[in-house]
Length: 457
Image (tube, rainbow, N blue to C red; front, side):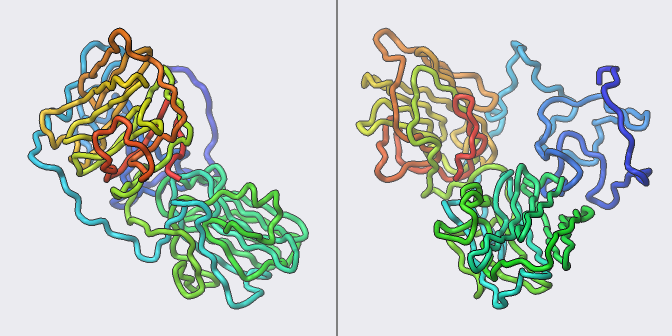
């Protein structure tokens, strides 16, 4: 790095040739195509942000002027220079559109089950044979998630025995626990919370256990028992809010799965997660193609925090994508309607408004060359900053909008009410919102006062 040697390593024995065959193979810079399976090959699937140039491969300078293909990359242009006084050209203003870009109806993935939209989502599967998991078995399932933690399945013990079989994601990696007379654990090294489908096979043959994921060589271990006192009931994706034959210390640590599963097979036989043996609880359906973010259908909302304090300093960021001209992006308001802060789409404009508690509301809006610029079903970035009576609003590469409090304006808002994303419940006050029309589209990367949390659940 920078002409200094920082580290070196030897490749595994036999690793003499690197191949990237087929139409899907190749040398990629900055990111990967959608759906590209990175299991065991990359630590992160997050695309690069910045500029890459002067790439040399095998002593040959690669010219980015003629790539095989590219997407969302500005070929032949350097990115914005940090601290530069030259503002980037307003991308949104340059796109002349005459109407909102409507999307076709969403298709669903047949047989796939979505977990995590509410508490205690799970599928209860009851197998006929009591001895199904007690000796030898082969279980397969496919899963897809962006979250690093979550239960894939658990099979509790019987007759008061605190035996169990559990497979879960821990820090993005599959972790298997088989608790019999002794506890045996096995973990995979591949990071799997990349939003693509992964195929898991867990096999027990007498005292041998194999864990195979996609095309990676299986993990192997031995267990000191041939038989386990587990039942024929399996909980997939989570556990119910009821008594189970599990150690209390374990139940308190189990985190529900957030994502989709499909294709479960036991000993070669397909087991439908919505079939006769399965009892689903608060699960949903899955889309064939996904990306990071949360979809709001127009009748939903998310609670970011139940007692949010605006105070005298507020910094927020989010990205949205929609085909509508109106919708609530964010709102917090006290029961009487003030103090309040809100961010919304209003007739094609991004509007930030508030009342610090003095009944003197303020409003800051960002308009565009076309009123249909924000409903083009593309991702748009919104950033707002408030401190000591000074407010700024920036959308994409547009120039910032400013607002300054005049003499007598309160500069601190004391709130302790819920902060809602994407809409409002019926009982919530409107605050400074111009409309109670819930947002319809996708929202991602919500960051408030430097805090980025998994608020979608």
